[in-house]
Amino acid sequence: MNVQPCPAPCLAIVVPCYNESEIFPVCLTELGNCLRTMVEGGLISPESYLLFVDDGSRDDTWAQINTAVTRHAYVRGLKLSCNKGHQAALLSGLAHADGADIIVSIDADLQDDTAAIEKMVRAYLGGHDVVYGVRSCRQADTAFKRITAEMFYRLMTAMGVRQVFNHADFRLLSSRARDALLEYRERNIYIRGLIPLIGFPSTEVHYDRRERTAGVSKYPLHKMIALALEGITSMTVTPLRLITLGGFCISFMSVLAIVVVLINKIAGNPIQGWASVIVAIFFIGGIQMLSLGIIGEYIGKIYLETKQRPRFHIEEKEGFHSRILTLTQKYK
Ligand code: UDP
Ligand code: MG
Image 1 (cartoon, rainbow, N blue to C red):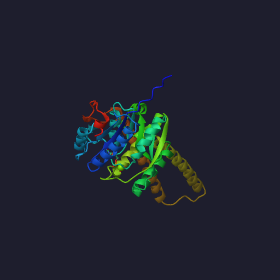
Image 2 (tube, helix red, strand yellow; image 1 turned 30 degrees about the vertical axis):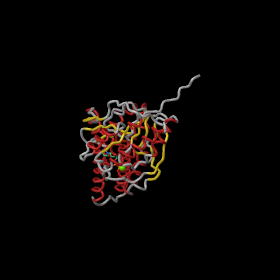
Image 3 (cartoon, helix red, strand yellow; image 1 turned 45 degrees about the horizontal axis):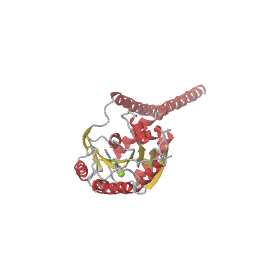
Image 4 (spheres, helix red, strand yellow; image 1 turned 135 degrees about the vertical axis):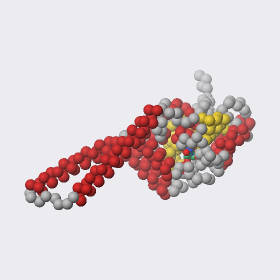
């Protein structure tokens, strides 16, 4: 029997960029080299490409992407109409990775090790649809970022959310895993929580996280908190259950308190003073406000989901027309 060798898969590397003007040239060179090495090694097809998504940057990131598209046939660019956030930018890139058999998503700042991409592709060729990039060492992150991130992973696990520890959005998806992800139509999007729900064979590739090569983090504290809240409310209703549990415990304690008060009354020594009563009122009042806030957060999410608004708008697309070039022309 004549067995045809499997053609090398077409790889798209999706890179969300927000105000990444400083790092872009380095990122383009490093990812371009990475792609070229794999194409020349016959690991991926010569049609493989880089897809930069400009998430409404206010600096010249889009101008630089455009120049890269005109100079290199292996570069494509997508411009969102305004800043929609990392998750939406990533999703738009995944949705527009036309013709790719495999898609790797990576941040523009090159904190994630590009050498791990080849290992991911090999894991795909070994039969895995999802390959998670897992940080084995995060010493390059600030202590605050590392501690809060690890606390968040543990909190999510405690609430029953399946999430790969120390994995963010550096991963490989096969085209069928990507298609499955795009079937999740929610606006409240937390990609790293959805991937484990998709199923399909998966594995991990470990790497050391580096420091940002240039520029500053585009994830200030308020964006980190917003992502954490998005993650919790999108993946679990445990906080609502905790409210019920808290209400149950407080009711039980108040029944005990009533019994104690009655026993004291019957015994002829009623409790003096109202300070304890005031403290209890404030305590219960605080718990109620907090509970209403958490419930409100979920109702707000339902409200936003019912609108079914688009998750992003594409303003410009560059480099998507098919360009048939030889390998040397393409990787010039
Ligand atoms: N990013 C984005 N939109 C945003 C914020 C960030 O597309 O609103 C991109 C950013 O350009 C980078 C990636 O998301 O490629 C991760 O951001 P960053 O490296 O600043 O986050 P950190 O590593 O500090 O968590
Ligand atoms: Mg970063």
